Amino acid sequence: MGVDFVSYGYASAVALGGIIGYVKAGSVPSLGAGLLFGSVLGYGAYQLSANPSNYYLTLGTSTVLGGMMGMRYLNSGKFMPPGLIAVLSLAMVARLGARAAGLTSAKVE
Image 1 (cartoon, helix red, strand yellow):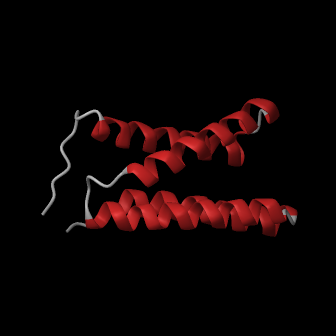
Image 2: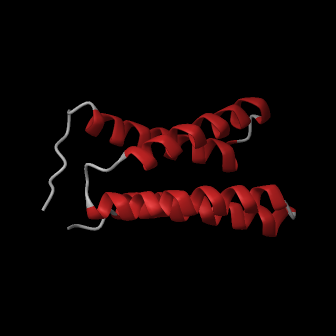
């Protein structure tokens, strides 16, 4: 079993973004959402590390988070943080979507 560092990094970025939003702006919703989504994505990264074919939780969470943050970016025009999280989410959706479509192989050791 290999560790999925990309997914763990993505989960960490989401959680850290929530923490930074709280520290800089005192935004409790940012903290709650960042920690909630980061925790779910962390568990999804654990599942991906255990079995690369078990991508459903991370793919679904990345899709929802990408849609939410993409709308926030379009409404505010600010790249940081909603645009960055939307781009990272889109990259994860593309990565895991390719796996779901069978375009990439997921080695199960």
